Structures are given as structure tokens and as C-alpha cells.
Image (cartoon, rainbow, N blue to C red; front, side, top):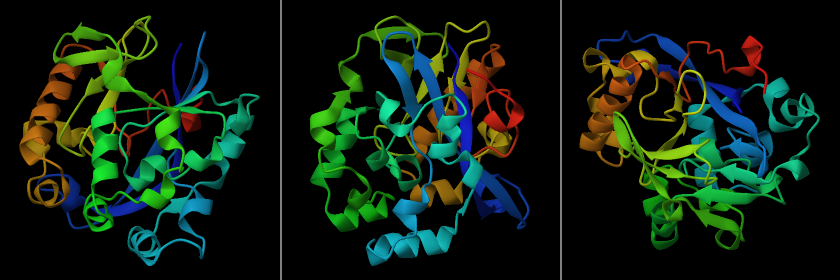
Length: 274
């Protein structure tokens, strides 16, 4: 069982903000989300990426419309969930689970499109979203209007899954109870932020989500300082998580980040298959 990742949109960012000693040129970042089919749980998404119906409608709050206007994501129409799932003979109603790695808008934008899905997420992160004021959530890039009203009743708390040791990484949570997919806490970028380890592949594969924006930034000499201090939940934890992911990679594991510009063998656009 292996995941395939689609690119929901391109977003431009000054390279200097996301890579130490980068230039002030614009660098176009991907906004990935993933799909895999678990033999028992069925079709499962990893986040949802950006979606047009969530960001570009007049019914959205001024805050969310302003957010979309500032970041100006360029949607990749052919890799939006509808056409992407069709390539595998699936539709939105077939999705049984959506793993929510954290609650930033570019990861939860499309949750409402999957009416039959259970949501697998950090209980601690969900509690924070519920307890925060709208302004506090906005400060952390979270928009409650993107989260379905019945999210709590459809939630499966990842911290309740059995714990499993992982070399070079924090202990993971065994999502399906068979060791196929482990939720790996990688705090720093956002409260409750985690990656996903597919440790039963021939080469262990870690989707490290937003630990950094690009692969070069996982290395000590490439890690940005100012920008993460301004927007991250905890800069010290960003550093520690980056070190752990880098150690996993140096030990022979394969790593993919949500926004990395480099193509991956797991990318749908590169011909990846389930």
C-alpha cells in the first residue's frame, strides 16, 4: 500500500523566507494532498489541499477572502479532488477517512466535500481550535468556517491509537492497528502537527507535511530563522522536528514535504500509481 499525492495549487513565496540565504525571487510551492487505499479502511485522503469552493466564494468571511487574496493560490484544476479521484475510479462519497495532519486552511479547505468520511486528527489540536477565539485561530491560520459542523462527532483521535517506536523519530501512533501507517508527531509548525510514516514500504517513506517548506531547509544550513519565528507555533520545536526528519532521511528513509518544489516518485504528476 503506497500513497499518491496530487498538487491542489501553486503558491508563490519569496525564497528568502523559506530557505536560509535564499534569494528574494519568487519560488512556486506545491500544495499537496494524498490518497491511499487501505485494505480494510478503504480509500483514505491525507488532508485536502486548496479547493475553489472553499476559497473563492462570496459567502466566505472577509478574513478568509483576504487570506486567499494575499496568498493567491493558483488552483491546479486537473488535480482537484474530483478529477483526481476519478483517475482511480473513485468519487468523494467513496472516501472513508480523511487524515487531517493539522488545521491550517490549505490542509482542511475541502473537508466538507467528503460526507461519508471519518476524520483522523490530533485531539489536542482539535481542542485548541475549539477553545481559541476567532482571532486566536486566525493568528494561527485556522478558519473554523472550513471545518464541518459535525467534525467532532466524526473525529477519531490519533493520540488514542497504539504507540510504536520509530528509529530517529518520535514514537508514532498506529492509525489502523497494523503498522502500515503511523502518525508521527512533528510539532512546531502548528499545534498537534504530525507526519505520516509508511514504514512497510521497501524504503520507509515519511510524509513530513509542513516540517519545512522545501527539502533543502531540513538541513541545518538551509533552515530559515525569521519567518518560522513569526508564524510557527514553536520555533524550537520546528528545529527539533527538522533535525529528526533529517536524521531519518540520512538513515536511508525517503521524505516528502507538502510544499516542496522538487518532484517526487509519489506525485501523481510524475506517474505515481496506487
